[in-house]
Image 1 (cartoon, rainbow, N blue to C red):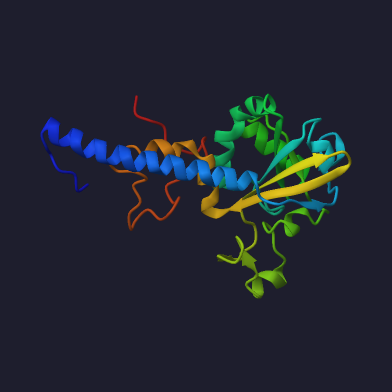
Image 2: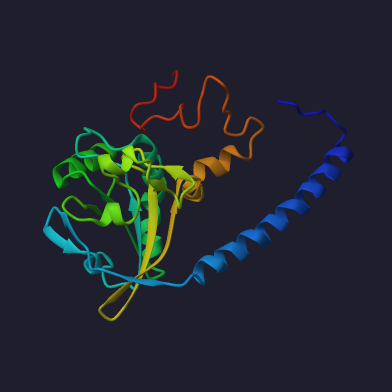
Length: 233
């Protein structure tokens, strides 16, 4: 792991040097958060989705609040289960939903798969967050997380051109509303979603970190929560 064994005084000196870097990172993170909040906005249509109760609009998803986060959950209609990486994210935001509601924010997930598949998978995973189907709507395509076969063949851009289309892709979009008008304020994709995954924050504290190596590609270790081998008794 490349760690040196030192005296306590030497350790403290190294820790104080790192603390200065951590403080600088915190200031930079705060500045970025402010820049996100100050992004310009653009009006968007009142997209139509479907959930277990029937058709719902994007405005309906706000649930009376003024701010909405939509997690673009990868779930192709041909799949029998949702994406394992998006499931990892959902495990983390699950219990944030009621806290966000207290701060005028609603969080929902949206996927191309039909309502029946979404309901079945949500029950399997023990989740309670709202999850709507965007099948029949251009929503996923407009926000760059689903692509047609033609777009894939042409290597359409993903994540503002830093990646290429491959079918279903993860992302998160933020909306606000004023009266009857809905605005898109922010979207993030790929590694921009790391901030949602608190497990990574814990792993980044320990000596081996995320512990990637040549035999364990990025997220290759990951399983759905109910698919890991059982721990020894």
